[in-house]
Image 1 (cartoon, rainbow, N blue to C red):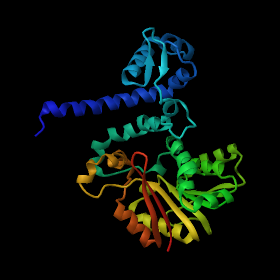
Image 2: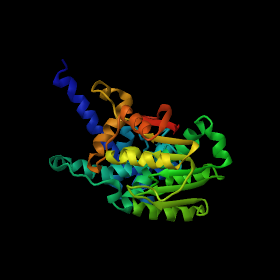
Image 3: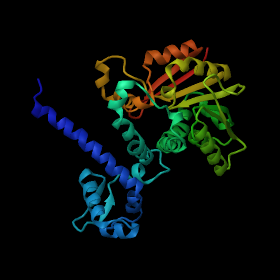
Length: 341
């Protein structure tokens, strides 16, 4: 049986991770990682002067970032970003970029987690679409890399879909939010026509603005949906739900998938990228399940419930879909492809 002496370091490591998250988020918000990447060899004093920051605080940040492995420094204090972190912390266009997610964690998730003891007494929740436009835009920033990954890598790898995407498809993105995935699709496959639906009206305002700014207004549209259905007629060659399905209230999921079935073409594809909750207590500790386990906990205050594999497949079958493929992607995402029966 483990002793307290053996167990205590585990808690200490978790606390270190908490603090490292805030350190990294501060580096993103203040532009420190970008500046160091653009001008390697700066000292903390030069960095503070260039960015107009308080030098003693910044020196402590730099030393801590070096200790945590985010930065490299020589004995003269000349700084460089540690190899491999450039796309993660300094390149917002990279699919690896995590700066948006760090902002979501420290600005919103931390607030929710701090309220959990209170919420455990009431079971109340504030869903995504009731949190305002700034929150929706932060979620969009947090998922930008994922959108790029799905559009440019995962969708083209679906057997038989790549050629159709290149020729031009009529696609529907369910839960499109601020339009990030629609824009990623439009950039990757210019021949297509893309429509998004969401119940989050503030997010749709941001989506329309982004679509106009990108010059895609003729081939990318968004519409407000309701929990009763989508104001659309099909058929659509491709319907996607990208990190959205677990955010749909469980009692509404059959109806949403029913709408997808109504709108999809006979030979169309339904593609869902989401998370899958473990089915057993033993599976909760499997390393590949750490993402969905922690997502389920961190999103309690949003009312989100992550379905198990059996629940996903039962819902899809009930709506008239046959699952073609199921694959684990990255650090715990599930990619599902299905077609109408």
